[in-house]
Length: 131
Image 1 (cartoon, helix red, strand yellow):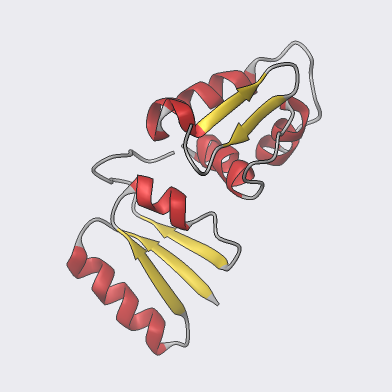
Image 2: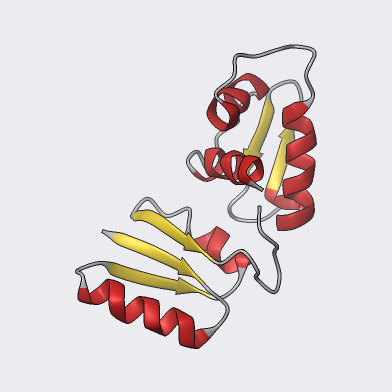
């Protein structure tokens, strides 16, 4: 099982790597949030251990993290507001809510505008290869 450790302090990352490897896990390390976004979308990553105080990205709230997890689980796929609401909040779609739009805005500010693309009339998608 492959784990991704996202930690900007090399000493802490090394400590986690040694301990997890000793327990039979395959460990990959990212030192920035941007690097973690690239590595974390791989199909072989089973779990991400994430430091919330990274130099380039600040820690994505519980709802932001749930929304990001929905995107990372479906890279390059267009996800409708209804699908995102169900995946990130466990809620049925309410056509009057702009909850998804608001939280997509929060994520864009933290991980970069071009990472989450708006697909007019359809929803949003996570861009892996950049704009």
